[in-house]
Image (spheres, rainbow, N blue to C red):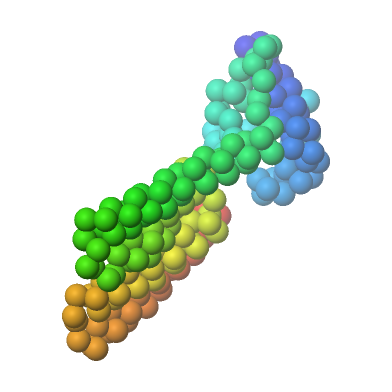
Length: 204
C-alpha cells in the first residue's frame, strides 16, 4: 500500500511538472483527456492514479514514455514541447530534403548521360510523392493526425499524376487521363479510414 502511495506521489509530481512546462492548466489537461479537472487535481496531489490507458494518453500528449511518468527524476530533464517540435521539424525538413537531393542528382545524371531524353524533369515530379511518403511515416510516428491525412491525399494524387505524365511521355494515348478516376475511390477510402479511426479512438 505504501508503495502504491509513493508511486502516486511520484506520478503527481511528474504530471504537475510536465503540465506546467506546457503552460497548461488542470482544466485544459482534463479537457484533452476527457476527464474532470478534479480528477487531474487528485492525480497531482498524489491521491489517486489513472488507469493504464490514460497513462498512455498522457505519455503521448507530453512526448514522454509511461516509465517517465511513474519514475522519480532527479537529474533527468524532460524536453519541452517547443524544443521537441523544433527537433521534429528539423528532422522532417532534412528527410524531405534528401528526396529532393536525389531528384536533383537524377536530373543531372540523366542530363549528362542521356541528354536526348526530354522528360528528365519528371525526377522533380516524382520527388513530391516521395516527400509525401516521408511526411506520412513521421506523422504516424508522431501522431500528427491531420498531417497524416493531408500527406495521404498528396501521395494519392501526385502518384497518379506522375504515372500520367510518365505514360504520356512514353507515348500513351489520350485515354490515359482515366487514371485519375482511380484516385476518387482511394481518396474516399482514405478519408473514411481516417474518420473511422478517429471515431474508434473516442469510443475506446
